[in-house]
Image (cartoon, rainbow, N blue to C red; front, side):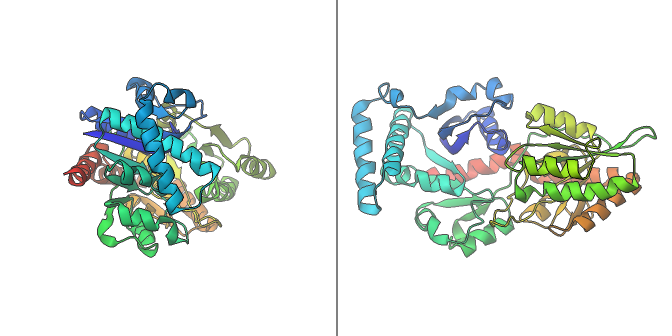
Length: 396
């Protein structure tokens, strides 16, 4: 199959789940091209970008690029999109630029001959909807979390009406879309997947001279609960001198997080590692004992979907502590692969972290259960095979 992956920004270090699908589809012999609305400004990239030469399959819009395409077809598509916007909504400079980009992408789709468009995130589905209507290609839209956590269902009225299928990550997200007015028969639950060959199972144990290493990974935004992690860890380290915490990530809350660490005077026990490639993330996961991610619903309403890092950590046999939030209870099975606490409850989080410190013999029981759970439900090979069936149904 010839598949268009339409995304907002590519490549993006925090969206490895999209890259995982692309790589697996390429391995299975499909022709995948990525159409990115904006170009990434990140310096760090996952190694698969180079290994599979994926940037050669990635299309960004530049005015100079139009001259290399069929100008007659570009003018044809631009006119179509222009009049589509004129008759269906108010016109603006922003929409003019959007029409030019859509026309440019459409010319490439027409030239290469793609079978379908797969939009990643609801707002990208909205962006691609005119292409679906004008070039008459099936459109699949995948929701991932914050895009489903909105109050105004009218934002997606046309998308829900015109998409044959919508994929979500969990039953919780399915309920969010139902509340927004998406027909239930269009919603398919499709889990994220990871390459299990990269995440080797490793038993966790502690020797007397070693410190117990907690790890958290996530963008420095409110919904990741990093402030809550640090507060819980602060109380933990007051009781136990053999504990340390590393945090991988970066973002808008970095100053607030650094200030909290300094105010609590735990700079010698909490290490901020910044953004890291997947390869370095895997190294850090394997050297750590317990994973912590107390995700919350942000004040803005922003929610998680399924945090990939919870899948990755469990795949290596690391026990995890997280929250009853969004789709997390489907990924982390409470009392079986890890422990869940209520959102924003730093006291309960501290107690679970303390229990883990005091009961190291339970780490491997949780870890083995976690590995099995991920193998059965979040294996990229199985998940892409299910995605192939969705694609085939759409283009038949």
